[in-house]
Image 1 (spheres, rainbow, N blue to C red):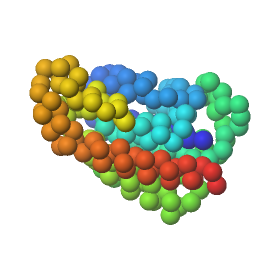
Image 2 (image 1 turned 60 degrees about the vertical axis):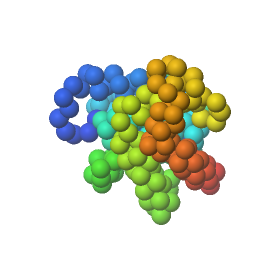
Image 3 (image 1 turned 30 degrees about the horizontal axis):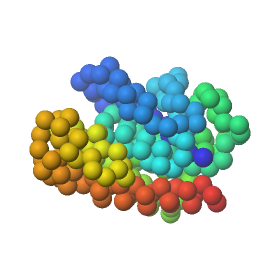
Length: 200
């Protein structure tokens, strides 16, 4: 199982309300076993449905540069409650520990992972931080295109071009500049590492 723990970064934010609204708009798009919930002390917890959803949630949060991010991997008491506040187990404890680590040693992209294997945690953190840097560097024009893409579906570029009133060539160029295809391949590798960690 996978749990994501989030807390606002300890720095001034021009418009906290707008940033918080943007965070919830992103988290609402993540498939979950227990939806993301705001708890006391500016803590947000959620249980992504699977490894793919966990990676998606991490990168949606990294995109906004608003939160410290802790990802815990491990067992949970089952059945998993619908309310994230009631979730208990090893993954939950690891997520909270990872969140604390993200606040202290997360670097430019404050993501920490706890799987119970420190070497694997370090590798996963490096991969997720690189992906986080990549998505964070995208321009608003690139996001306008990327946000309309559905992974694995062919022939989308013409429809996206019409929706954005730009040429298909401009859509294709934006996809290349955004590093979208490389991101999708890298996500697959991270997901498999998380699945392996969860199975052990």
